[in-house]
Length: 530
Image (cartoon, rainbow, N blue to C red):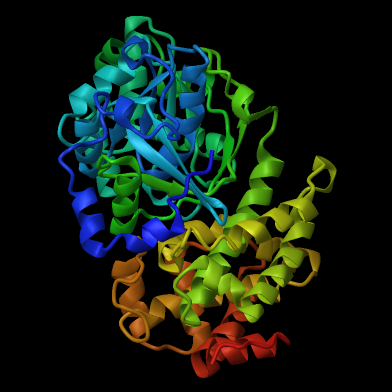
């Protein structure tokens, strides 16, 4: 149901009115849910009767706008054994915000038609791993835990340039030396699976929900590699005591399910203005509501030996192979999102809707889709026309105010699967790729613009410690691109790597010398950006 405060009443609310409402002593909680406006959607089930069945690693805004909502629907339908225990691997911020609210939070679904408010109750409790890794391992080894889901972002998988585990990463080194007090998802999963095996408890299913190609298979590979290193570091007696009569790596490789999934929902960062508005509407304060769009999609490979909720009853699609859907989403949605972010930043656009309203960027995105679509499997029955039409509507949603700087974060981790893979395939096939390669150049140019035409820390990248000084050298474009490719590991195993570097360098020359307007002009695109 759509709820909107009448315009004349909103106009009458002064800043002090809003502040007074927002600073109410009442917090969203189990006790205050009955006091919420009747139009607010609230949990229809007794939360005291819910048992934990899912542990989620990485309780950020996306999880709370996506997987937690599907689970909330299942709980309301009577599947009471699938409550979520959330785990933050780094920061206590989400726990600190939600614990006084009994894990409840507001989901605000925003569109041009108004805002729908829903209180989600599927997160039963939250743990912060650095504070008490033992408590996290305890809930992971609890026999009631049958699924572990993850949204930890691409960079947290700690992959080396070739796609395998970065065994030299300090956190991996730490976890191998301290298996009972891990820091990484790999360390927690491996230790928990070892303990479950020793106790005779069946393994949980590991469901990766991050934007990685073949994310289930990718995490499976990484965890097996981690477990093999762990096995090698244990004495024979210690290994037998920890995990039985064979290696933990072999157990994970053969006995643990890692279905792949594709997730899709746009979730902008929550602002103080969002908190104030929602406090006004609800009459109680929510420390960390979540903003999102009406669209929501979840495609999951149906491989859950320990059981699962009936997600398909609430819109999820259960399939045998998620790859066609994943490729379409990564290359059409995520790829164009990155293009809009970097070109938008270089053109002075702060949000996606404003950037997409720029005729030059809109035309660029259409051309980018035209290059990427032929790289998708032809026999998968994908309706790319309908999908891009829907993306056009989603990117035009002015109610979301999705910041280009937010999307720009972690480009070195995102571009390989969003842009670089498509560009390489186009080069190999001899088809057009000029828009794809311009996106890579735009990322480099936007990174170089920080501290100049963009604020110093406007967006960040895991490689910034090496990337920033490299870009400040202002090397010739060819040398810059080659050095960035070496640093990021882009296309490291492809024969067309040098060709790709040269094509990106041509665009970087235009962006450095002329800016985005003339870079667009070189592609035959007219811009109205001054």
